[in-house]
Length: 320
Ligand SMILES: Nc1ncnc2c1ncn2[C@@H]1O[C@H](COP(=O)(O)OP(=O)(O)O)[C@@H](O)[C@H]1O
Ligand SMILES: Cc1ncc(C[n+]2csc(CCOP(=O)(O)OP(=O)(O)O)c2C)c(N)n1
Ligand SMILES: [Mg+2]
Ligand SMILES: [Mg+2]
Ligand SMILES: [Mg+2]
Image (tube, rainbow, N blue to C red; front, side, top):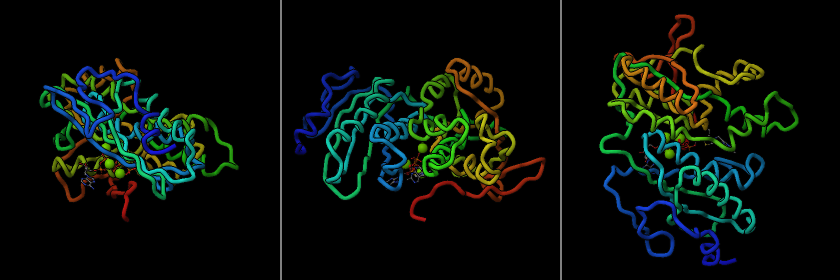
């Protein structure tokens, strides 16, 4: 199958977004909007973000789009379009490529997102770069610089699951409690779109999605907002059977593991009820894990039984 028949094979039969004027099949796509447009791109590379042993082709597509939708969720945006740029090595067969696109398509359908373009080239390492486009009402994008002293720090879901899943997938000889759950959290992340949108009425909330680990994401919020953040170690939410892993693994994965695609946020105390209600309405686990203080020497601290320590930016970092 050549480049052009491949493009034909992934072209949707119909589009769902009514604002789309031109999808796949021209030099560029065209859509119209009166809303604030939110856009992000994330890239997914073989042996960096996944390997043949950690992901089936279907999961590669699902996870790559999931990470991108998660960035839209972190802005409070409503997902609408995506474009896929793919580098395909010779050893990937047509059926595997179809499965990658099926994984993306299944997740996109949940949000009525349309694929409206992309690029196909051959190369050495499977690489997928996805650009997502969403929208918010005017001035409702949820930025990292919106934290203020006195805010509550919260997080959705549980942390460390994805890295536990990765550990299980790469140590196949051992058996673990709830291993399918952890593997699922690694392969099929569910971005917190509904929860973030249920916060619409709030004037101010800062959000960041957990791709690298909250040690990194909390410091991004703190630095962007010129404040410091204090996290409470014992309040970081983890899954029921997380204590089967060693203390060092638990500590490392929940704070610095990443790829959980939960939302970390800060909000004024008087708005906490709105956040709680949003969580209830969208069936989202929600935990208070700290508070925002005046800008200090370090962006993030972690407390355990009243002992306060500096939490270094210990999350996943490229080019290290
Ligand atoms: N190579 C690049 N060129 C331009 N902007 C970039 C590049 N890499 C990252 N950025 C921008 O830097 C910011 C932080 O990126 P990143 O840490 O990857 O965010 P996230 O973890 O949410 O994906 C974003 O605004 C992103 O668009
Ligand atoms: C084979 C493999 N090795 C290592 C990891 C761990 N890992 C790779 S990238 C990453 C962080 C998230 O990716 P990044 O490109 O930083 O996404 P962004 O922060 O831009 O959303 C982690 C924890 C993995 N998922 N698979
Ligand atoms: Mg990124
Ligand atoms: Mg992000
Ligand atoms: Mg990152």
